[in-house]
Length: 440
Image (tube, rainbow, N blue to C red):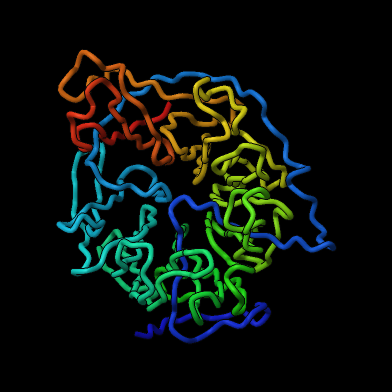
């Protein structure tokens, strides 16, 4: 099925933009993807040399109260201000197929949309005015080769009207890297939707695009593209927008040696686009920065350092860039003093940072209740007060773990996992609950 939408291409855009079927790129779990042009004549200094490192932010406990919310999947990339939460729920086939809107202050839960039979929602993005999601009939397996359908849809929150943004049919996975070709993390600001997309000639020959789509006029424009190349050479992925600024990640040179870096590519560069001037600027070079997230003139991202001896998983470092100065600071890594002594630093995979006007959050491979307060140069850890939920045993309220799953303007969503004795006697639903927490 071909889907025709209004897409324009600037005359000065490098690379050929195909008018065929729109096909997809993908986010493969917490894979640390990215790339970089590492040419000898590169004019940019390596962030490896120029990034400063915060050795020891002071740690402060902040007392907060938690409000239980429905047990839904809340995407960490949604940014709707926190007043109303967009969540995904399971269908009878245990697939994320229903879209909900929840108000944590009034406790109102509204069902917005359900996928047609055989389809499920793969990712979503939102702001106070628009909700965008991708639905697909891809099966949940990792060895198949058949093609599948996908469709990107947008809902106007005010009137609940839905229109299709983009759609396509795509080969299931890349032979080289095993990635799903489907639009990955989307981002919304001021009526603009930014997403990365891959056009697939065969399972490995791809053309990458960064698309800016106006949600009200339903017109899209390719703002950056790479012509058809082997996906192991170059790929555009992971984007974010705030007001008139857009960032994305360009990955390059497939990594066949984990002794160099524990990532699918050897290099990953971050690029900045100004929607007003239509100028593109390269922010990093010769290193591996990915998972960018914009807020005002600030950028949160992850750096993947080169592999150390006896390292077993990717040891991502949480980084902060001031776009006014282009200075990069590493604010959380294996040396951070808030990690417990029984945690082995090199076994921590950090990813998916979010930044607001005061804090930076991120995901770990284990529960993380910490935030970086970059205004006051300190680390804060959430401590729940007046909290009495423990499965069937209110006398053991100290036996739980807190994990931040989403950062909003003035609040966070957390998951609380019960870790007390005899957990094998409980099912998952009785061991884990989701809560809404307002930040001071």
